[in-house]
Image (cartoon, rainbow, N blue to C red; front, side):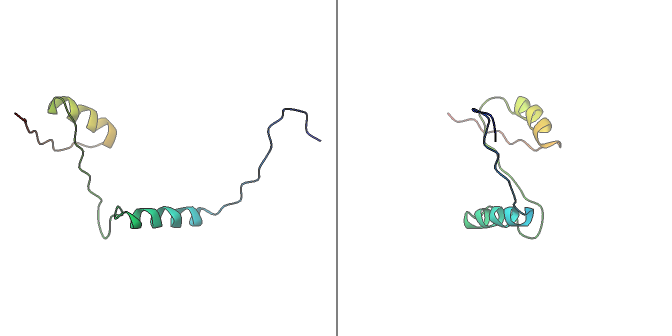
Length: 72
């Protein structure tokens, strides 16, 4: 018998394959899975392109191309 207030233990029995299949289905249903190659990403941000590039290098662990646009 567990002491009062102790958390309920729930056994977790789930195959990694089942989880990955669920993730694949969600990505497919939204057209987000990369097929046959490297995935590409476009990120839109406000602020200085130079600063974003510094942050993106840390986030993505690679240098990124930054295209800047100025809206008038």
